[in-house]
Length: 97
Image (tube, rainbow, N blue to C red):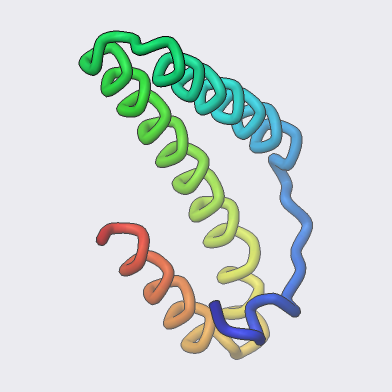
């Protein structure tokens, strides 16, 4: 991650919803850990991992939506739209790998 990205901050309009989703994901990951420890059936574990991946994707999409509507929109209004769009596109490219 680039150093300049670490220094940027924003207010998350849906912060509590994101935190709630992340707590659920955290619980799901702990559940998969326990399933592996308990030698559960591989397909059951894989189904839980698929659910976690879907949940993480939903968090990512919610963040992209918020970022676009707030940060990118504000950057465009301030004449910094190209930089903000390029930054968003770079992270989108990493997300779809």
